[in-house]
Amino acid sequence: MRVLVTRPAEDAARTAARLEAAGHKAVIAPLFAIKPTGAAIDPAGVGGILLTSRNGVRTLSGEDVARFARLPVFAVGDATAQAARDAGFQNVTSASSDSAALVRVVRRAISPHTGALVHIAGAHVAGDVAGDLKRVGFAVRRIVAYDAVAEDALAVAARDTIIRQAPEMALVYSERAAEALIGLYARMPAWLARPGIAAISARAARPFAEAGGWKVKIASRLDEAALLAALET
Picture 1 (cartoon, one colour):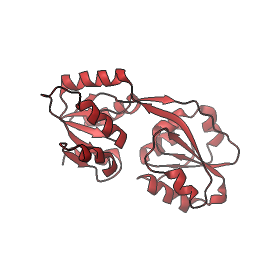
Picture 2: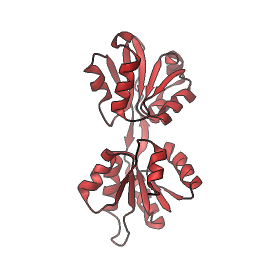
Picture 3: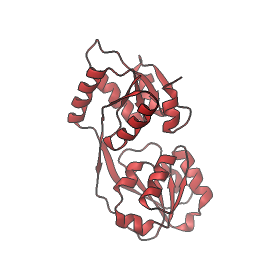
Picture 4: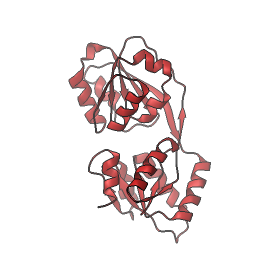
């Protein structure tokens, strides 16, 4: 099966390898590029780190990792947690789910008096981890460390790739990616069939339901293994 991967290049190759190992043909066509903002982290009073994407880990300098290596780190999913361990963090806990689960894990693990939690985030986030934790007494500093930028050159290249390879399915990891894919196919030739969609969550699937005319499968869990399994159902 030809499967469209629109993730930024940093993640697309890894996903493509998993698809190829499962016997699929990966069609790589990134719709976003990850751009670090260069935002600095004030180390004063930091009691822990919140990570909701591997991209947040990638934006941290070696100095940042060394400074916070022994602090508790809370990651939204297993892949992000592993990226944090690989970077050098020594005390990493995975919520293995979504932002709501991450909040629950933090509340069970530490007290609001531990110190400020630094959320290394992108400009666009799903859920409100910082707000939810603040409402139960935690001090949270949200650092916008990167942005996923939709570039015209990427859209043109993606369009050409999709027309040439005509993917049968597409993997979708976020609501924003869903909206970008819908917009891209609105500019495709009329003869090109839309792919089926495998979405990582109901939230990521929602734009397709609102647009109409898309066939969507939703992963049983918020992780890539479940998303790839949805291709087979």
